[in-house]
Every structure is written in structure tokens, then in C-alpha cells.
Image 1: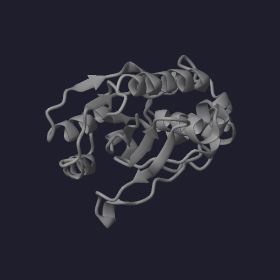
Image 2: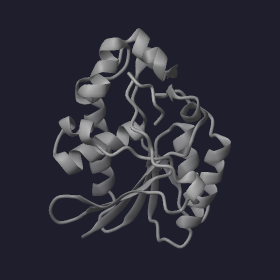
Image 3: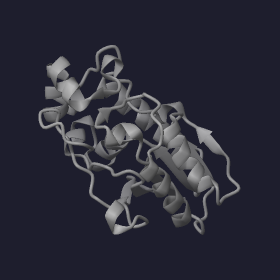
Image 4: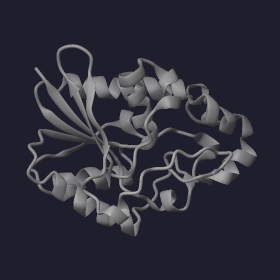
Length: 221
């Protein structure tokens, strides 16, 4: 039986536009983020959805609820989908991370699978718990269509597993835009992406491709 999973990065948050390394900081949705949510909800209005799962953080929860608005489906919080616990780096400006935690910043830029966030998780732990959550959702929804609202860090770990077979693939992962929609197909054999980071529901002026930042350059993501 084929299961279809829509993996969606949360809407734009205030931390995104301020160029912060948010982690689990519960940032508010930005004004543009609210517009993104309206358009995302309309995109899925006529799509059959069996279940909707979300990270507990409000930027992801708001994304899930924008889709649930048009469906008689509860939004289920899944702790394994929460963003990286980056400990003492949480909600710092990208430039501050590079200055205060140069070793982590170097690993993020060059070998993200080796990152150990001070006072938080290792990237290996993120990879394991995010993929456990995905496997649990697939197993519980055989033959169905589900939505997952989560975060860029989680999505990079899921993409690394599906496309490259392990955490080393994080460095080569796609970078996912706010409300970018990726369709994952799971059934007989290896799961695969039918589409990745589709922003077609947004107008051209909001459809800017995400920038893969490095702490050395401190570019936004």
C-alpha cells in the first residue's frame, strides 16, 4: 500500500526575518508568514488528507492548522518533529553564533552531521529521532495521505536519509523554503520524493528561493 506524506516547512517567523538561529525558540509568525499560511491552506483545500502531524512549536502548529482549517482532521503533535535543540546557541543572530561558537559554526558549514550543539542535541540525535518519527507516522498511516509540518533542520535530516542513506547527506541536502511542500511516497521498496520544496502556491514576489547560509557569511535561510 502506498502512503503519501506531504512534508512542509513552517511559515516565515520573526526569527527568520531577523536572521536568527532559532532552534526551539517559540518565535511568532511574521506578517508575510500569515499571508503564506492563507495561500498554503487554499492549496490543500481540495486535497484529501487523512491526518496532520506537527512539531509542537507554534510556527509549525500554525502551518498545520492552516491546512486543517479546510479539513475535518485533528492536528496531532509529534515531539520527534521539533526543531533542533541548539542549547546555548538558541535564538542568537547568525553572526553571533560564528563569533561565540566557532567550532560548531565550522562543522555546520563543512560537516553538519558532526555538529554538537552546546547544551543541546547532537546532529546524530536529531537524525535518529526525526527519522523515528517519520517511520512511526508511515507505519500508522498505511495507504493514507498525511501532512507533516516541521522545520528546516528536521527536513534536512529526513532528506539526507531518503536521498543519501545516512546523516552525511545533510551537507548536500536541499534547503527548504517557508511553506515549501515536498511530497514523499512510501510503499513497497525505498521511499522516494515525488517533488521537493514546491512553492507554487506563493506569488512570484514571495517565492524567493531559500538561501543556504553559512555562519561565515551569515546569510539568511
